[in-house]
Amino acid sequence: MNGDLQHDGTPVARQTTMREFVAVVFRRKWIIIGLFLTVTATVLAISLTSPTLYVSSGRVLVKRGEQTSVLTADRRIFDNWEQDLANEVELAKSQPVLSRARKILEDRAGEGSAPPALNPGSVEVEVRGKSNVLAIGYVDGHPGVARQVCDALITAYVRYRQDESGVPIPEKFFKSEFANVEADLQHFYRLRSRFTTDEHVVNMTEQMRNGINRLTGLQQRRSELNDLVVQARAQVKLMREMSVESAVDLPDVGLPYSNDALIDLKRRVVEQRARLAQMRERYRDDAPDVISARGTLESLEGLLKDEADQRIRLVESRIGVLEARMNMLNAEIADLEGQLEKIPGKELTLSEIDRQIDVLKVRYSDLVGKSDLARVNRHTSSEINVVLLSPAGPAVATNVRDVVRLALAPAFSLVVGVGLAFFIDGLDITVHHAGQAEEASEIPVLATLRERRRRA
Image (cartoon, rainbow, N blue to C red; front, side, top):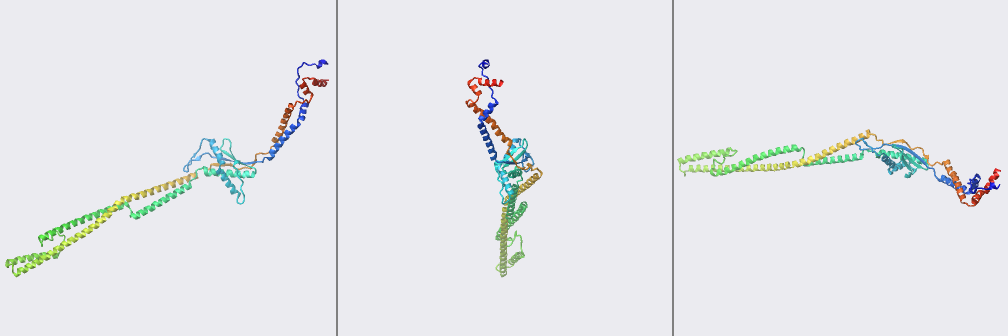
């Protein structure tokens, strides 16, 4: 028997039995129960205090690219797909879209009812895969509000893209330009009318031709009058010189006209001179008949002299009339020359006004053509930039209470509690059973007695 109790001094490795395991669990049961209750209470508190959120979403297809101009139907498409879609995501969350969405909610709410509040932080926008499809959603605690606001967001985004992303016809620009051109045309028309009225301008070319012809005629008439004046002055000078030398025959030399009285006086003077010469042949100079004939001759010569002087004064008066007519012609020629000198300036001014009017007419025609082209492109080109694939759908809860997953935390807390119980129990140096006594004393007697009894 003593041989059976002997051992070789090598400690035998012991294994924990189920009894010892259960003993540890019962001994440290409050740790396990406390951890389990704490985790369970925490899970229940979080689950019960967390509100249920609902999300409603819809999908839109974005047509990439932008129209280059209202005058062409071409679209410019960029190669950077990620950047384009990232811009669209931010555009869907932008203030203009949110403002339109709020306006839509106010219109739909009607008078007397408050529209639902739109929280920018609750807006969710994402790209579906590698496509051009955007998913626009809204999260709210009320499913009806989530769907209503999501539908307003999608509608606002689609309208904004249709109104702003394309290249609309600049109606205000064309209207303003038409008004400006028409106002300028009316201004130049009034200016031309006032200029032609004030300056008596009808047809500058015809007026110039008529003025030159009239000036030529007036100058010719002045030249003729000048010749007549020179001729009349020469006649007066000659008549005065010849009247001194001869009182009978010479005064009418070169006169443009004569009369019967002057001719008759000349004839009578000649006859009286002949009669006086005959009397001088018969009688002496102091004879009464000779003296009477000489007196008669002197009377006739006096009359002829007076008639010659009168004719000279008549020619001189005629010279005055001709000079007066020349002065009138000179004044008329000077006025006409002044008018003709102004015609080139008037023609230049009128040409400049007409040029401005022609330029404005061309501009007006160009605006009409461009406006018509823009309308044609608008009605013959596709204006769809966004396609609504699906409207806002029913709101779906995002944080549904999953009982199975919630129960996992308390279950794992039991495992952690058991492990923590064994860890704390391992730190305790108190001897609770024979196995611990043998480990502490390194004498495997107590354990072998039990084993021997079990074998016996």
